[in-house]
Amino acid sequence: MGKTVKWKKKMKEKNGFIPVGLNRFKEIGLNRLKEIRVGQGLTITALSKYANVSTKVISQTERMLIDPTLVTKNKIVKGLNAVRSTREKLLTFKEVFPD
Image (tube, rainbow, N blue to C red; front, side, top):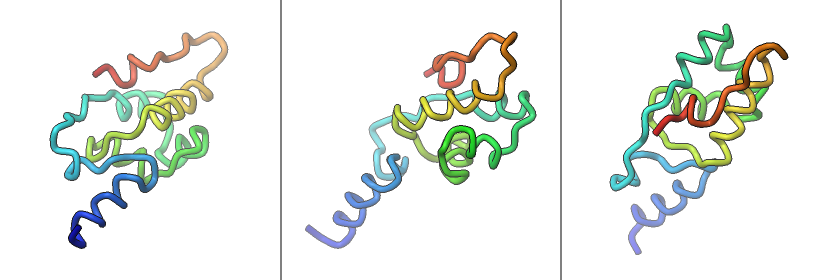
């Protein structure tokens, strides 16, 4: 196994997401993350704290550079719902990540 293959395998396992360039067979679905985050008046940093997900992962997810794991996506949705008022309907997973 060459250095490149070992590096790619290691990167797939790092930080709970798979870099897009290393998984060419999986299409990244569209998401409404940025639209919803901005609509709620949240910065990436604020959402990062509510969701317990790094700012890098949120930013790269919004720009569709990575496809985070299902666990990470669920954390992001929970973080978005954490700042909604009790009178507002909670967001569903499909509303944020409709793919």
